[in-house]
Length: 200
Image 1: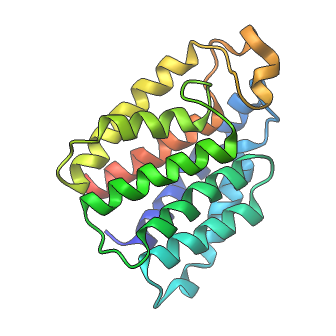
Image 2: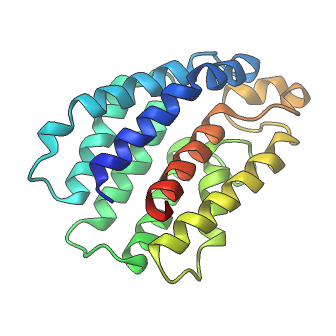
Image 3: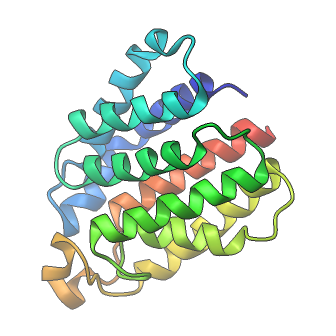
């Protein structure tokens, strides 16, 4: 697996689901989440040639900047914050399951702080933190990908049934119950691709 292949596959998956993501977002958000994230990922794919010669942490950091500058609303800064923190923690480290889990946890903590949220406030943080909790004992990156994706699906189904307590959706209160958060669903799609690429 190469980082470039992963990015291309994620961009394709989000493009295929952008209308669905926008539909979710229209119910408890601005309605443009899918379009914004898809556009930013497509711009990242266009820039992949410029990633040649970069280390993995540099590639992730560059992806973070592209998302921050090309995704509207809160999603760009939040996704960018997560990736930038992951990149920072991974710098000068050999990629293995230990360093990956440490970077994943560090990125989650940064996202929580930047997003001013808590676990199960119905945001993308819920999915990422659920994945972190479920993968603490995994022994390989392939096991991480599988377990994280399974945990993400379970968490997204759970948070569908609760009221949002963070972000624009929180203004809807009880009316946000029964609808998946678009950002959370995006993270599920990304983890689905990671699992597919890593484990075939």
